[in-house]
Image (tube, rainbow, N blue to C red; front, top):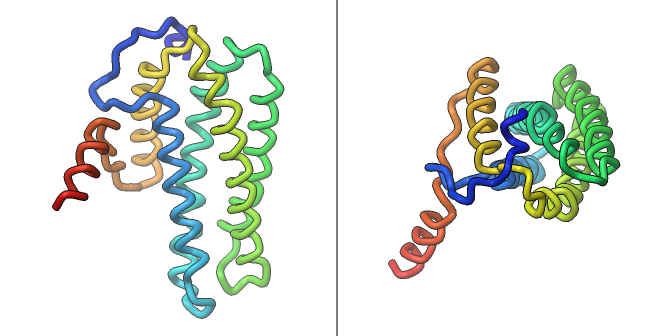
Length: 187
């Protein structure tokens, strides 16, 4: 943690994704899972449960990485600690909903409602992070977001292994993504 609050090095790491890029990718991934959940037919209980469990696990890992690495580093450099306090309170509410979902099933009367409210809480949390916290973190010269990104990748891999999940696919660098999307449009 202490290493992530040092001055920026100015160079991108091999993966090309810093801490904020990684967290933003997580946000996109969970948003897609919730969108898939919304499209599942009411009688497909197995698919609903699979998607809800996937969302809960991704959110659990994401929150743990933020709480262990990102938020403490922010507290060291941001004057507005209330933003981090609010994010942590939001995490608490999200964790309660995750627990309710994980201890019930799709046949439970409140299951869909819990997943829907979780989705809405996460959407609100993401909007605040991406709209307020991430821009302030990018401007904080004391944060080494590249080094923090490396720490996050390692911690996420460890947590995924502990939970019996497959390793995450490497998303590639932003330049590679841009090149790929440009190339695929011309094909």
